[in-house]
Length: 307
Image 1 (tube, rainbow, N blue to C red):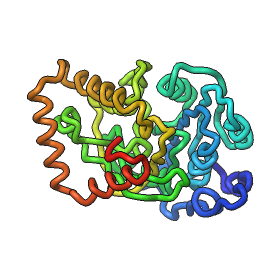
Image 2: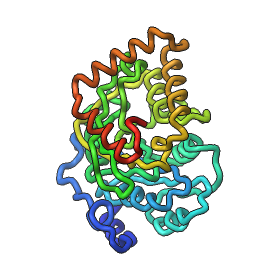
Image 3: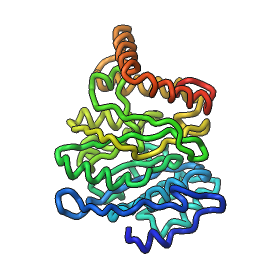
Image 4: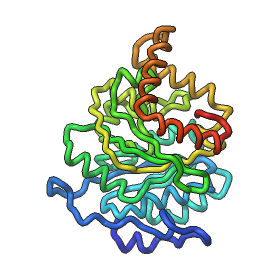
């Protein structure tokens, strides 16, 4: 987006300050590492009744100071003020659609069919990118041309947007993934268009783990994963979100098990559960403070120790 268009964004609401309200990312002084133009990055944001959060998500993309980004917002037919907020930013959006859909995975597929970027990412309406995120991602893809998926780290954030405890993407490993010990921070994970197409996009099954299933499908399609030791995005934790809702805990666990079984090609057994425990204990022992700080934040926010 040209700098003059970033400067013409609607003003921040009263009492809103800092990123992504009154602060913008600084344009990188470095060009692409291979001397070519920056690759286009397409971000799709699915939304449904997220009036409280969606403006921050939109601004966190538009204020990136990245020269070639397109943002596509797919609203599932909100009945709150979300549609008005989306309309306010319409001149800066590549596309916006407001119509009923069959869930987030369907909305994302709808958005990515409109995307033109070489690199793709998706940002839920209650999450937001951190400054310099897109320039970092583009640089990693250009420096590693054989890589299909790039994942960075992030933060759990309060509903207010205040950053809290850090969360880390693990180095990709199929074995630890199928034993529930390899996690990628979703809003900090980006992938090449060709790999998304090879994986046939999101599976529109009624699951709560569409992001996890996409990682699995891309791995099964032969994707090469790469980790970058940078903090790229924030994931809000609140009771109204899919990840934070206590009513969906059982469903999330069942859906994650279904994805793991898909990767294994068979049903999970008691031995698998034992192996999973071993891998998770090993992961915890490597960074106990990380896990404890995350659990303490979840308890203080949701009154429980896990998602």
